[in-house]
Figure 1 (cartoon, helix red, strand yellow):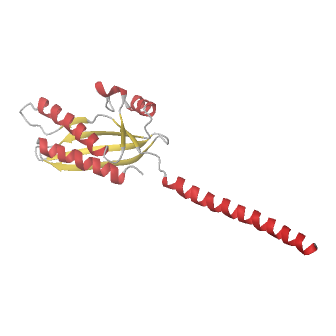
Figure 2 (cartoon, rainbow, N blue to C red; figure 1 turned 135 degrees about the vertical axis):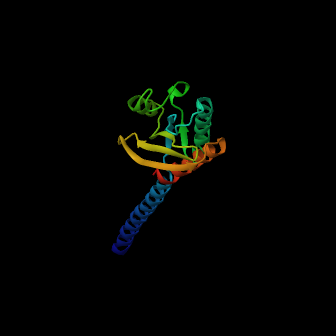
Length: 177
């Protein structure tokens, strides 16, 4: 009788041990499953500003405004392939770092559930050389994650489109953790 009781006790301990082993294994698999679930990388994109220091005589304001608008569209299209881009409420207005300003842009981006904010400027130095200056700000830490200058060549629709596409790839590759 004593041997049967000891056997029952060992079996119960075995059952409990097996239960805890299964529970521990399930928790490992669950934590691995949750580790694979990544929060979406949400980015709000402010309109880029434009600066022209080329000194060219011919007024190209209308051309540059059109190119800047196309730059913004190409940039957002390129970013939205792998990053969730959220709209800012000010998109119908100026919506740049100067107007309404960084504080308002950050507030609007947080309201839109963005984790990051992209701000920037296109600078035409000459007919041959242009720069794209941008920064990605982490809205949780209130600090820049990335601050970069990219150069491009030419002052044509194609040159600006390529600059926007390259900027999108650079943001995706180097700026969003």
